[in-house]
Length: 293
Image (cartoon, rainbow, N blue to C red; front, side, top):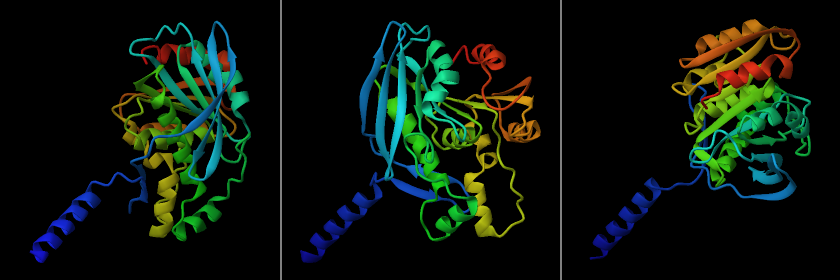
């Protein structure tokens, strides 16, 4: 009888462990990053403004030990309303902040009918902190800890989770977007979170690391390289916008990343000199391309 009872207890413990939904972080042998079974995200919000066009909040939330600050704008009378309005989270480029991003692409996307969430990424804006070099992050990875490059992707995934939790937002129409460095995290997040409905990437690309390095080094480099992930966005749409005269991320690098993506995909070329979102050149082209999102 005791043996039978012990067997029952063991079986309950075994099946309980198999069905555990605890959050997990892992990197596969080929260098693919996973953040599985994320718990519901808790955040606080403060009303910033409420007018005839939109309601805007300031949000704060914890993301694996880092307090993240964000702006959330919910447009009114969105032409895209079906089962709620579509949402899009934006990750900006280095040296920017959420307020500056709102003054550019953020407000334009809200006018197009999207609920827009912009976070201050680690190292910038109110969130602050330090983004270490790749070499320092590799040392962290080698010690079995999460490098900041991975945590930046996790912050993007939490942005998706926040939009998913909003009653105003259609959870089946949440998109990832990013400019420059932020576009790299957006590609990775959109690839590993299959609930993301598509990606809009501005002036960004993968790194194209050489593949003939030490396997452990290569595992880390693949884990942070959008080129390793971009094919995983399909069958969801990928739209990339890039200037042929980009003086920060060469157009050829964007072409390389785009070539690795699968359909449906679109590369929109502009001709202006400069980097990141340029309203005069890009707004109309983007609006035309994402009109059915």
